[in-house]
Amino acid sequence: MIQTETGRRVTVQMTNNNQSHTISKKLSIQVCLDGLSFFTQNIASKEVITYKAITFEQKVDPASLLQEVTTIFNTHPELKESYTKVEVIYSNQLFTLVPKAVFDPEKLTDYLKFNTKILATDFIAYDSIETQDIITVYIPYTNINNFFFDIFGAFEYYHGMSLFIKEIVEKEVQQETSRVHIHIHKNSFDLVVTHKKKLQLANTFDFYSKEDFMYYTLFTLEQLELNPDTTEVFLTGAIQKEDPLFELAYTYIRNVEIKETPTSSIPTTDYILSTLL
Image 1 (cartoon, one colour):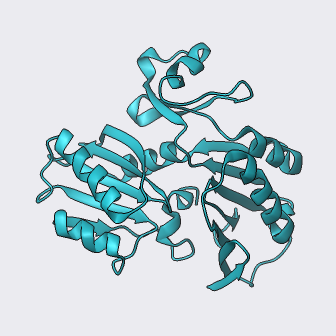
Image 2 (cartoon, one colour):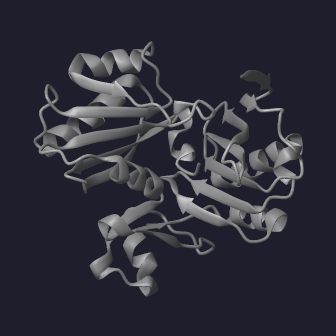
Image 3 (cartoon, rainbow, N blue to C red):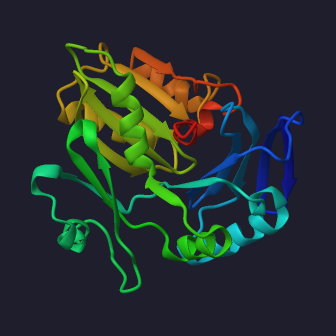
């Protein structure tokens, strides 16, 4: 692992130098308002060739995000190489979940207008979570989508919450009690509650201190009548056992555990990105 610091960005990099430049490769990118991460992968062997994570010094707005992404692409030439497949994850709070039974693709604006400010230039997309009969309706960053299209042509994109839910449900075991799964970003966290391989709740919260994190987490447990002394809580993302946030979580939640990604090539901090392996 190599860590470098340039201006407002910190880059974490892992590289496998034993790869041929003639192989068929996939590029997977995760875009957030506080950073961008990506990995390249040998499609045939599924081996990760390169992984990098760039964290911004502070959260940016969507317009400034394009400037950051442009700079990253200009300073990381591997992003402009030829790829057989390109996938993009948008992790933001501009989403809502809709039961498939009442979903109408002609009413996408209606699903979002009560909890998200929608601009005239916004494009609304949706993912299907088949195992739960749920649709994630969300706003990808249009300027970033256009930027990627200019470079790659066609590519696939998803919302991070869709992938987080799918990953959890597919690997969840039949439990008689509810389980809580939390993915922590730099300034926000995704919280998903499951019970017997079924989704009970999914939401994203901003937080600026470890006390904010605990308040929202414990409030959610209280509203669902879940006991913090017995409920299993699994953490992924920007957290380690040595962090004050984990120490505080363990003070109030007895069964709390940090989950690892399925490969050492992608660290736990990028658990959602690793679902594209």
